[in-house]
Length: 478
Image (cartoon, rainbow, N blue to C red; front, side, top):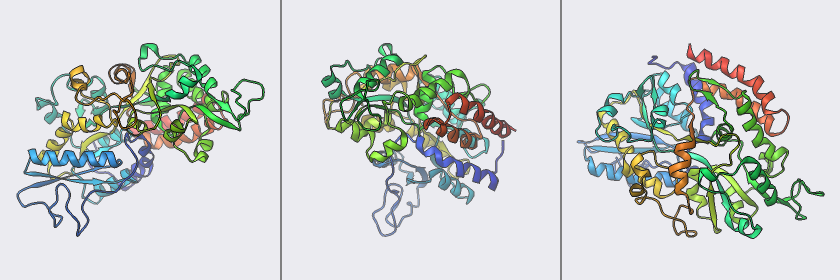
């Protein structure tokens, strides 16, 4: 394994990893929380900005929004109370996270611990950037206990050649949100959180057509329907986020990456059909806004769900933390079943950097991040789903699950426990990219862009792009 990263490798990972930010399972930006000169100190700092003489400072970098920032600060304060000889210096980097993290590494000042995008985790391992925590984890009586995590998913995402280089923060997944008031007004039975009752794709399309109306009250397929003058869309399925595209591929029985070969399989009939189904929502069925049209509206899917111009939205489980605040009756559901029900299952990974001067203290912090206390902070706000088995039991869920009765009264819509305990762990597909994927994605993404605007079918686009992408992945293996 390489221990030093060349400038060429640094530029390759940093330049291409910026696209990984769309996969962050948290809200968008806020400011860093390290205390500027002359202000009140935060966790891990004295008022002069330096730690006390008898403590070790562990730096921790990550992205996230206000919710994540507040959660990390609360966790750091609690951890420091339990470990008075360790201080946590939380450095939040809202933009260009991967590039700035690697710049710290290249400058010889890596953080001790960090968030790591799932898309570049194996790339970092292959370059020797991450701390091997296998012995620490296996010796730990709590986080190293059998079945402490949901398995085999946790081991699948965190181990490379049998060794652990990080621990997943949580789980998140693609799911459906809907405005229940619209369904009630239209007299339509809404979809279910129970995967055993998931809508078939044809049923989903039928309802999406019923819920899509133009300015004259016409629906897609009716004479006189005007696709250029739609007042309410049936659904929105994002095309700019791997979570939702991988969900479509898995939902149709395909695979984005073959886990045995580490190569892209988007040219398979199942995978390309899953992607085409998403494109056809816009291009053929006229029940979903095209990407450019959606952006031109100037509204988020949350705002559109609230004002009734959108009936259903495909989004991440993390989005519950803000969608639950809408002033409307909110429902959630599994994704509709194509050929084989599935969803993307992922999250960022907490890692220690191999260049840390405080590996023992870094492990103590990483271990804490994998305990119940830290995970509960984000479960309670609806940002995360559990990765610890104990928090999925009825007793464990009592610690964080609150049924939503309306805006500001509870978080989780009725029946959401089925998403947590059944849909995600039983139908979730983990997707963690092999070394070289960020460069290969520079081939895949433009090819998919042609699909979303109707210039090519998914099968045509992937038959051309996948061999080129896989050649890059094969070269990265060498």
